[in-house]
Amino acid sequence: SFEIALARSALTLTVPAGRTILEVLRDNGVDLPSSCEQGACGTCEATVLEGEPDHQDVYLSDAEKREGRRIMTCVSRARSARITLDV
Ligand code: FES
Image (cartoon, rainbow, N blue to C red; front, side, top):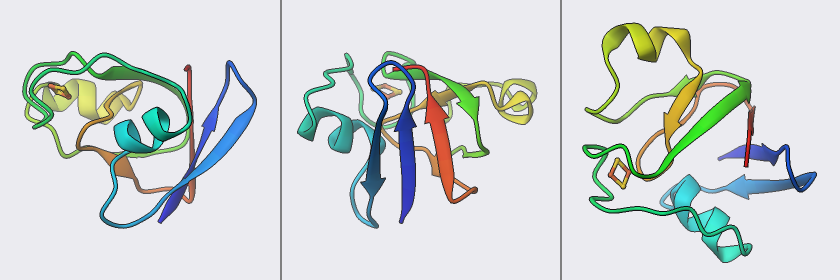
């Protein structure tokens, strides 16, 4: 599991194994749009403010993945113990 810190609401939430960032956000009233939910379309994107994403999508380019500033919340996770998102 890892933590997501939500910059706009000052909430910190835990994403357990088997659940996605998108699901945990929705469970807590943050309703990001989504479409494919397979990491392919870019609809569920969030901006990463701190921490290291573990990219599982096929939407971002390799360069964008290395930059680590954007994350597809339907599939991607965190390498760091905590990741801060601009949501
Ligand atoms: Fe399509 Fe996440 S909903 S990439």
